[in-house]
Length: 295
Ligand code: SF4
Image 1 (cartoon, helix red, strand yellow):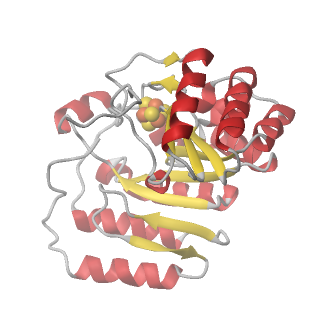
Image 2: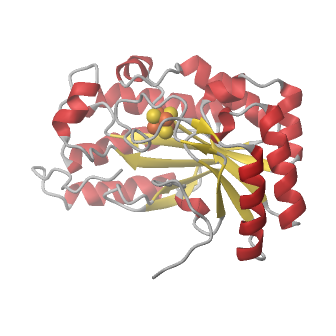
């Protein structure tokens, strides 16, 4: 039987970029847990773990992951914790692991806005150098329909505040989020928000429906009409074409994506658009994304 000394509270998620990181659950679940498309943590009640528990786990992890360079703080939005709760965790990590490249976590814009500039800088100086923020879209109407609890302005404000404190951001946009009806406004407003915040890292994932379309339609407050794969590609193309930010490292390599795209926007935009044009020409206009759809 496989034995692991860490007893994770499943399910555990981490961004693809944290595949080689040690994962430390400092919170369980997501403090918001209300986004219409997201089932990641609906099986859990949000909880902050005690410092004593975390401290023991850091010691165990440091014994297993010798030489690891990155630590990811799970679950959904560990950054919701106050500076007073996060700082001792970061200090304990630094003392047990020694030199690390970075510590990161998922966050919501409101989690950043709840901290002062000074607190953010302190956390940055304690090693928390990257926040993964699933903004999903820049379109206010769609943000409302998916119950994201954020707006275009709150998102920009939160992300800029983190960046001004020296914390890098990795932003996620959800291709197909609003279906056919909201596709164009989703692509254009998402490009607009990316231009405004110019994140270091950007990725696009594709809307997944692990519990089926009826379940999603019941949670989505608008008129959702599923898009074909070609329509999803066209939406992505419109989004990328309208981005004029500089040096944004872009990835579309999540398991939910129909096409792997990688490049630096501003340098590789033409190539990415050309890959999408090829994919559009070579895909049947009647094909829909196939099940299973991913959590
Ligand atoms: S998308 Fe993020 S904020 Fe929304 S419920 Fe899921 S984990 Fe929470």
